[in-house]
Length: 226
Figure 1 (cartoon, one colour):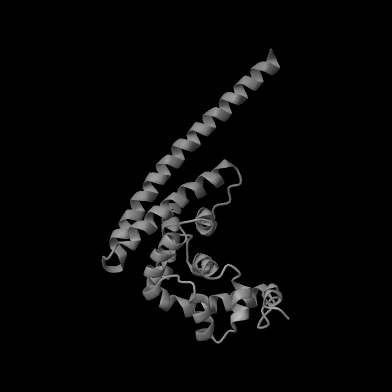
Figure 2 (cartoon, rainbow, N blue to C red):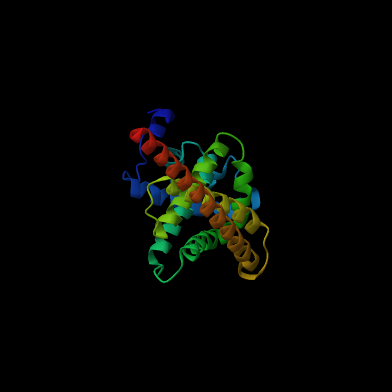
């Protein structure tokens, strides 16, 4: 069997999505210690496979994009870890803004041991095709946080909230990368300010949309009565 044929098959070590994701996570965690020193280099996936005891063929089947796919998976892994931790949080007693802030803080706590990998990952993925996927990854993170915060909106509010939080997440991560204060205290303060700003923008945008809706309704009623 050719190498190309082997790559198209599912890894022999696990056929289900859960099993494959477990292997992807194993490869990622095996790779991250090297990333801090050597970055997301071309031979990273093969080195991680050897360290994790996974064949290179299986590693390539799990990450057809190679190291780029592995770098993208860091965000996916962090999202899933964040989802699990948020499910254990007692959010009921918190204000919505505090629920959202807690989601962002948890995600940063998960990534804290791998801050250098996140930094180099943003540079590595900053060009196509990886860079084109970054906005969708941030949106997914924002969606998970809003769901955990109890948001059930299905109208324009759903998209407005996620768009605003995507901006907050991006700005906060960039600030966090350079924050050396204990327990990232400056980042938490920065996050609080960005959430306050986002909420003000959200209220303004929501009020504008409501006014437009009312105006359209009034025009429609006038035409019917004319």
